[in-house]
Amino acid sequence: MPTVASSALQVPQSRIRELADIAMKMEGVIRLFFGESNIPTPEYIKRAATKALEEGYTFYTENAGLPGLRQDLADYYRRIQDVELDPQSEIVVTGSGVQALNVGIRCILNPGDEALVLTPSWPNQSANVRMDNAVPVEIPLLLRGERYVVDFGGLEAALTPRTRLLIYTSPSNPLGWVATEDEQEGLLKFARRYGLWLIADEVYERLYYQGLGLGDPSPSILRKAGREDAVIVAQSFSKTYCMTGWRIGWLVARRDVAEKATQLNEFIISHAASFVQRAAQTALTQGEEELKRMLGRLKENRDFCLAALRKMPGVTVPSPDGAFYLFPKIEGVTDSFSFCRKLLEESRVGLAPGVAFGAGGEGSVRICYAAEGEILGEAMERLGRFLRESWGREDCR
Ligand SMILES: Cc1ncc(COP(=O)(O)O)c(C=O)c1O
Image 1 (cartoon, rainbow, N blue to C red):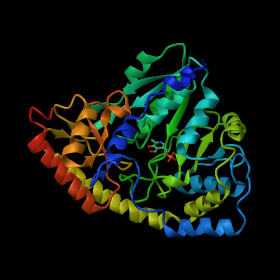
Image 2: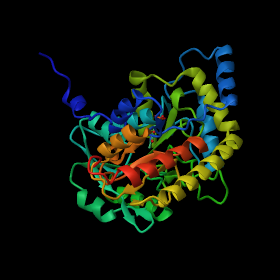
Image 3: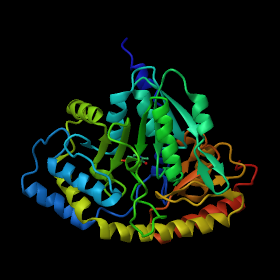
């Protein structure tokens, strides 16, 4: 009897999805478990897609994406990060951020290789490593006072002759942690010293609250890496432009990997949808004002939820510098999935269990605060009541 491949079988089900599947069958749930804003895609982007369809962008494009879009991405990096990229050889448009990770990882890992993954992190990174018959080795960030820090000692200790890759996310999902310049420098030096590939997942680059002005990006690793460095950046239009359902992202990589990713994409998705690529060009070139408005709202949401959480019993929560998540640790929680399930059943609030995000995640829950103020107000009210009135009860634990 033929069986499913072991590389597929070893990929676990996402525990966020498992919780969401329960919640989807229930009425009146406030859904804060997924990583997306409930703001629809802005009209100017939708109009650009319609126009592109009318103009005939319904045919195949280059595997690396429309040359015009790659040029716009290179211009964007010059403008936003002060980084020079060659649009012909260092940028590949992909069918989403997760597809950028997928093809990037596929280009550099051999079966049996090990990838160090800074956690808690979005589970799709480790899952993608597993799909290539390779092994993710999770190294948790350490909470020091109000801030998470990279455990360089832990990274050193985890090295083996099979270690080939280090993946980190900044700004982080689920922590909202943003790597400092020193940490980025340290990660790059570490990768150079041990001959590793470094993948930076920067899909939340623009959701950053600590810049001099709202809209300033979090610093990209590309500011530090040279052209010849073994560095790959995975990127997406999903979060910055509220385009989760459109499925478009990109990859920046050293020339050899960009070339290979382009070629492999022929056999995976060939390319991102043509008219979506045109809409993405409009997002890149006209999106700044709308983005700033959204950031203003997200910052308010973050501050509101942070203040509410800090008043709740047994909750500790560091202030995040980016993305749109809070990751509070809740005293007494040793099984975050069952905590989230109880909260869902009793209070109809859907959060993502910390255990879904790998080592260092258990004991916490992830709250996505990219929802309207009233919804968040109601969610905080229900969560606070649950913690005060239900969570301590014998039958609830
Ligand atoms: C850290 C991280 N990387 C990548 C992605 C993928 O984004 P998409 O595939 O929608 O472009 C997500 C989405 O939640 C994410 O949180």
